[in-house]
Each structure stands twice: as C-alpha cells, then as structure tokens.
Amino acid sequence: MEPINRGRGVTESERYLALLADRTFLDLWSYPNTFYEKRVRGKGDGKELCDLLVVCGDDVIIFSDKSCGWPEHEDVNVSWARWYRRAIEKSVDQIRGAERWLRQFPDRIFIDSACTKPMPILLPPPDRARVHGIAIAIGAEKACQHFCDDDDGSLMILGPLKGKDHIDPKAKAYMPFSIGDVDPGGPFVHVFDEGALDLVMREMDTIADFTRYLQEREVFIREERILHSPNEAELLAIYLQHGDDGGHTFPTPSVLGAADDFKITLAQGSYAAFTESPPYQAKKRADQVSYVWDRLIGVFTENILAGTSVAIYGEAPSALRAEPALRIMARENRTLRRALGAAFFGALEAAEQQAQDRFARVIMPFAGMADPACGYVFLILAYPKTFELLEGYEQYRKVRAAMLEAYCASFLYDHRNLKRMVGVAVDASSRVTGRQGGSEDLVAYEIDAWTPELEASVREQRAHFNVLNADRLQMSHLSVDEYPQSSPSSPMNRRERRSAAKRARQRK
Image (cartoon, rainbow, N blue to C red; front, side):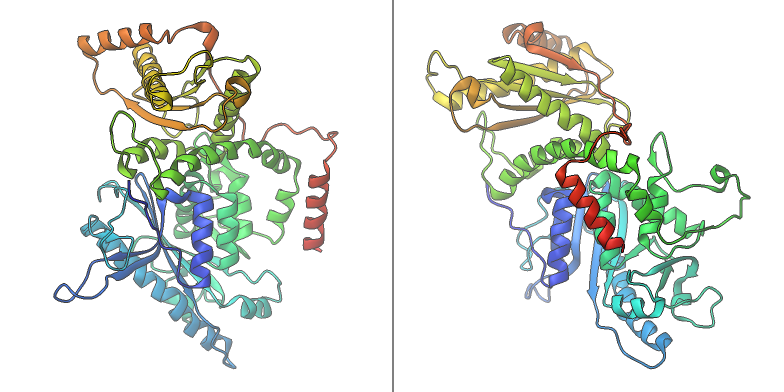
C-alpha cells in the first residue's frame, strides 16, 4: 500500500489551517493545496484548486485563505474597500471556480501539483454534494482593533449587508470591518478572520458539528435574522444555547416570542459569560472521554496515510476500502463520541479486569447517531497463552477478523431493522496476554438483502465462534446529555483552577 502524501500548506496561515483541519476533521478527510489538471498541450503543473479541501460523505468544504496586508489610507473606507477586494472578493472567486470544477470534473482533482496522484477518497455525486465555501481573510485585525476600540479585532457581522454594499459607504447598512452575505447571487460563502476560524473550529471540532453550524449560520445571516453581532464569538454563544431534537440551531422569532420581522442584536460578552457557566464547564469535563473515539479513528487513518495497513486474507488495504467504515465513525458529533468513547474504553477495562481472553460489546443505535441504521461491535481478543499458533500472529489476525465479521453478521441477523455494523477489534491487554505490542482491525459489514443461503451461513458462523456466549458479550443501549448536571459543590482540581485563573486574566 502506497503512502498518501498530502500537502501541508505553502504560507504560514495555510499551514496553520492544515493543522486546525487535522484536529477538527481528522487527517483522512483533509487535503491542503489540492490541484486540478489544466495544462497546455500536456505540459506544466496543475493549477491550485483551493487552499484546503475537506471531503467527508456528502459534505465538501472549500477553504480559500488570503493573507493581505492592510493598505493604509487616511480614509478608512478606502483602505477597507481595497483590503476587502484582495482578501475576500478574490477568495469568493476562487471558491466559485473550485465548486464549478468539483461538480463538473470530480475525478480530475489531485493532491500533487504534477496531477499524478488523484484524491484517495471519493467525492460525492454532484446531486448529493453539500458544498460549503469558507473565505479566510487575514490582515485587518489591528486596523479593526483601532477602528472599533476593541482588543478583539474580529470582523463584525451585519445581516442586512449584501454583495457590493460591503464597500459602498452610501449603502444603508454599510459599515467598515463588517460582513454579511458577500455573494447573495450564489451559494453562501462564510467569511472568517483568523481568530473567528480558530474559535469556531475549536468549539465545533467534528465534521458533524462544524457543518451543522455552517448550515444554520448560512440561514441565520442570509435571511437577515441577525441584525448585528460584534464578533463571531457572540454568534457562536447564542447558537450553543439553543437547539432542538436534531442539535443546535439559532433561535427563531417564534422561539423568542417576537414578531416575524424581529431581528436579533447581540451584545459583547455573551460568549465569555457562557463559557464560565456551570453547564458549559460540565460539558467540557465530560467531553474529555470523547477524544478516545478520535484517537481510535486516528490509529486507522495514520496507518492508511503512511501506507502501513496490513492485508488480511490477501486483500490489499486501501483508503477507498477503509474510508466508508471510518467515515461512519468520523461523522459522529462530539456529544455522541463521548458515549462511544466511554463504551470502547469501558470494554477494554472490563476485559482486563475480568481477565477475559475474549470480550465483546455491542452498541445499538441511539438518539442522535450519525447513522440510525448502524450499530457498533467492539471485540477484544487475546492471543492464545497456552499454545502457539502454526502461522503465528498472522493466523491470530485472520481468526480475529473472521470472528469480528461473525459478530457483525449475527447482530444484523437478529436485528433486521439495522442495515450495517461497524466492527473494531483489538488485542487484549498485555496484563492478560503477557505479550507486548498489538494491532487493530476495522470492518464495515452491510447486508442489502437476506437470502436463505446467507442466513444459513450466518447461523453457522455464530455457532462456530460461539458469538452469543453471555459471559463474553455485553449489549449496550447508550444515551447521553450534552450538558450533564454539574455539582456546584464539587471542587475544581489543580488544572481546572489554573485554567479558570488564566481565563480571568485574559478577560481582565
């Protein structure tokens, strides 16, 4: 399996964007500096498509990063117009061109300038693609700080601003350093400065959370439900405090008990106050276990990108084969990852505490999961201690993979409402086996239609591997609250006290 050599960004801001993307979207779905093949008579390098392309399922995010120095002029309106054209209008143009190419030639996008290495994962069909454009505009922070007399330095958000009104001092809604709907004639383009992007990607740090925020933000601004926000942080605060059964959303006039033409004006300091609240602090503490899920995904993506994934049963590993299962895992939001991460970690602990040579935990779908027709199987299997396998560790891997498939098939057999299972298998703890090192297996098992032959095969598999042995199997029906009940009397530990003190100093 060949390694996948992704771009790392050319400029400092592009490199920082690539690091943010890896942290938020995980590396298999993030591709800095992508190119499209547009040569003259077959010669020359490809042309840059965008600064960062993120593809995960039907969601495609196109980033255009422009870092432009502030053009000093005695008239701030002149400076603003010049900077806006260079930093924002050019980004919008690049995003529009990239979107057209993606829809017309999705198979002609490459991760190298020579256009010899195509995208290692598939783009969604044009009729299903949800394309999000993001313009990152850097360079106006100090001028904005001076103009607004505010240390924040982030661009303001004005819902009524449309298109060319952004640089027309005669326009009714005009104000320099303010952003609304920059291209109302086309798909919405989000504009973030560096601080705003860092904040949003830190709070919305999964592909599911981030794209939902973009979708809701687009409606909130394009429909002019927001009149004014002093920065992105206040917009994010009101979003995080409202929601429905499907997740967070921005409040509507009906929710606020206001008239249909009511527009929201946000005050400075809402985000700072919210992040100090007990529910928010409890959520952040509870989220720590969710990063077990991120690390589990990363174990597999790291091997895929490095080209070190191992073939099982002679099947050559590839990003295209592994990505669908990993994508299901990656599309879980932060709150759901909390429950899944705890379940996986709990299975490892239970297997070790009970000294089990085999332990399996099955997670049935629960409210909010990315795929309501998909369950999970976690299998912990020990290499035999009392005898040595003829083919050694390779034979163990084959048996473990077959056993994992048997668990997946068995539960699809018993629960016909499910369409697929994602299975993860790992070595038992060294405390159980006495062996160091280990490996991981991943499978996405899907059954489109049951036949008598398939049913017979599954019954044979489950009997052969004794899948339903209650002593080695745990069924889990999970649930989770994003904002868990916090205990006001619970003392903070040293790290939490230092963090609170640091935030207090920053606010001061």
